[in-house]
Image (cartoon, rainbow, N blue to C red):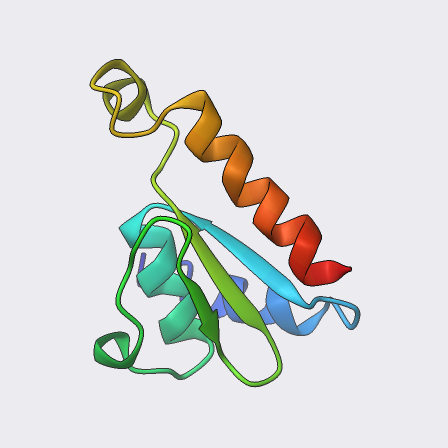
Length: 91
């Protein structure tokens, strides 16, 4: 994660129309916060949680791994709700 931080920071900066970032899982959530210079303690990870980061909004989802889907920690409906929330936010 540390090795890719500069790349992630540059990729985010290279998207001038970026308004919302979807993080799939806690590792992604924490990496985005670090890349943008935000404290993790100020933005607790939670499924469907929206975080105002000033220039961007971060939305979280549980990672769609086989483990999370098999244990039903993340269902198809829950995952679809995240995208519905993104669509609502962008409209």
